[in-house]
Image (cartoon, helix red, strand yellow):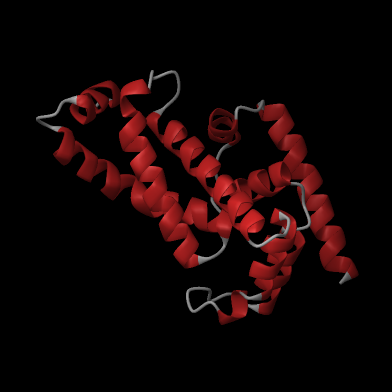
Amino acid sequence: MEEKDFIQKLLNPKTQNEAFQILLSQYQKPLYYHIRNIVLNHDDADDVLQNTFIKVFQHLKGFKGDSKLFSWMYRIATNEAITFINQKAKRNGTTSEALQSKIVENLKSDSFFDGTEIQIKLQKAIVTLPEKQQLVFKMKYFEEMKYEDMSEILGTSVGALKASYHHAVKKIENYVNSN
């Protein structure tokens, strides 16, 4: 089905529920993993995913089709995840960087995390990066997302994204080699 036709089904009250179920089945898993890569915690990722789909549903009428539906939803998910981390840090009286470091330290006890020591070391290295580099690295490394798609989602040029990824990789290599 063409995306424009699908969007019309999402906006039509008669076909909206069925179309939204299709949207959920197609995007629930990839959006969950995208959010989980940002917030790291399973329960938090579930909460942010739920908020993401609520926002998608609420703002669908405002979707202009300037980007792909996929990109628009990922942008919402990314913003929701970042907002969630910042709000959680504020509630805990700490910075988002300190909060993420604490979450990484607790990954071993997360029953939904089945990573190795190397993966934990990688996560520790990632949280030392600036927010934008973290996002770019996670989207490219873990989700194998194309730079063109990241560009639409993050509103950044492909060249800048490639540079951010390159800098992130260098910083991660330095961190891993020095620890």
